[in-house]
Length: 383
View: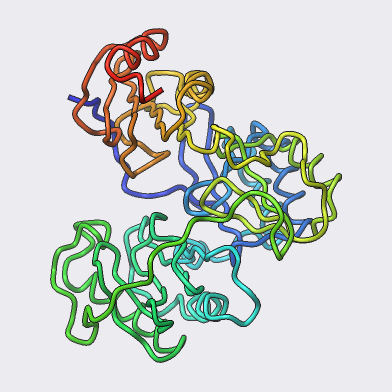
């Protein structure tokens, strides 16, 4: 069986950091999924002065700082608050779990819905820490694979749709105001019908209330933002979703970006004019580091018994498809099945094919040096 790991049931935030193998892990939720140039430079400074210097981009479009010591955390919070990167009220900060389709435009449905829900956060019930909202009301959904529990999308004929995660169909609504009101209503239904025990809407199998009929399907999902030129600026990738603050500062110095939008796909959308390439960032969609999911691994995570980063980098040069390298069975870096998944257990790896990190392994107790040889022996087409 796959290795067991402790599931803590909540996500780290700024006011509630999580202890990890390399210190405290602090997660920043940029307001509206966007930072000014000054704010991102402040994040870089904080990462270098109060942490390890590493900045991670999560699959919920949050920024994550690692290696924060308990003594440095108060100064970090003062720094973040001074730049408007955290809410002064911890309860408000914890409720502001909203991801936006990153190419939203001022005044469109995605923009207005996110702003309205932010104003009405106080009307939400006490929800499990991982429950969140996706504002995805462009011409077609982009965030279908991004973790969220209540989704604002569009149908194929252009109507706004509110959909509970895990349900194939949702409820058409007449306006952004109607959509946000229904999302808040469904959050109360979730709690009142015992959803807190399940933790997430997709695991809560109670029937939806009559006022939220499953009457229409969303439009087909479109691909995430491609790297390269974009109407708002330029899209760059982060290797394995990570970048050192020093690299990011140099990239900002060499660009004219005045704002930066975060995405859940290891990509940053830099708004403004800039060169086609920036050192340390990925500019080619074919770069294999964009198709490999890898958690920090040992020694950075206290639950990981194996180092993941080097193996992921080595395998990315040989494997053409999706790959997930996880330090333990929690699979924090990727919750969707991957054609090839490696899960750490007792200092070695289990190999799972077409599954998740907690799936049934095809092979166990593999050393890193054994992995490529084993894959070649069972199916050369996977490499």
